Length: 468
Picture (spheres, helix red, strand yellow):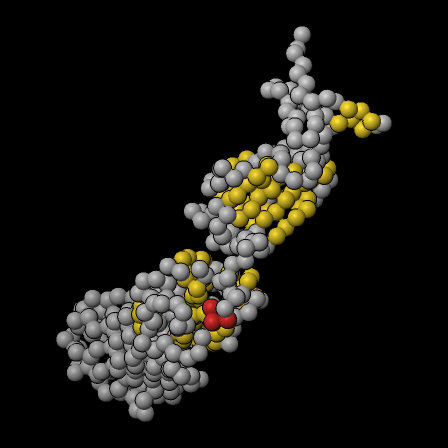
């Protein structure tokens, strides 16, 4: 027979049964069970075990999840009516989200599939109701009780550098400010906005111009900005900011004989009130007296002119429309004497180089295509990266190789004409997410095999602010 120990006198009054006296704890023996007590709608918080990797929750428990080391999943237990589970952000769900996954065929708010918590300071309490609705959120807080004095935001690829947070967008997205800082000065953000680069021309084509590069550094985010950074930082508010990342321009494709077309312009990149203009496409040589030779297009940086474009200067204008500081430079031109090569596309810090003439039309000629204008380096992401270089011009009748080299920062190289016995090479594309121009395509001596220009590189948008 089990031993029954009574620590205090049990009293029964009407329909009320009181166990124990004042200040006396009522404890169930090891292995004993209870029924009828029920829960009070709360959970037992597991403070001694902070979760840092995927785990399975238990009914009646609450957890603190630390996703600073990477995203992971909280698997819910098999649902039964009245089951309750809670979870709270320990570090920052906006950096890496916590996924909530129901058991088997259980539902979340009437839907199958997982849910994600991605807001800093967020906590939720879930109660299982029935098989129709499954787990329902009965409490969802997106703020800590102790409010973060700094701003928090989501969107893009998020990294940290010291006390700063960096959001990098390599494609379209949304920068969402969830909470603003209590100190207004901490709501000023640094930003880098680079548009897509222009495509290269063909048949001794000009290099594509780099996409416009605009950078503004907030005084509260310590890093080494580019030499062309300037302007007033954007002060954000709690709202969503759509982000546009410009694509690279299409390359010109020549046809036979002696017919080319201008490379395509890139497309703009946009953050809030800042728009960076697309890079201009490189010009192409037509070789026909009845068809004008193609000049480079204007843009953030201008495209280089196609070979033999001649005076007046037909390199595309940069910094169009004009902003201060300038977002780019003009493209190079090509002389009309002796079958010269294409001009280089403009870059964020320099004009494109000019194509110079050949001394002769045969082997051993010395014509050289223009180099692409150089881009600029910035450490907005935590380490220096150079972007927005212009594309190099395409060569013509060159031996040894005299193609235009792409500008520093990702500019594509120009194509190399091998018809005189020298080496041949295709033009290359501008590097992805640098906003650099594509290289200009070359022209074989007889004009029968024009080479394709290079495509412009896509742009990028980067936002940096103080988060702690």
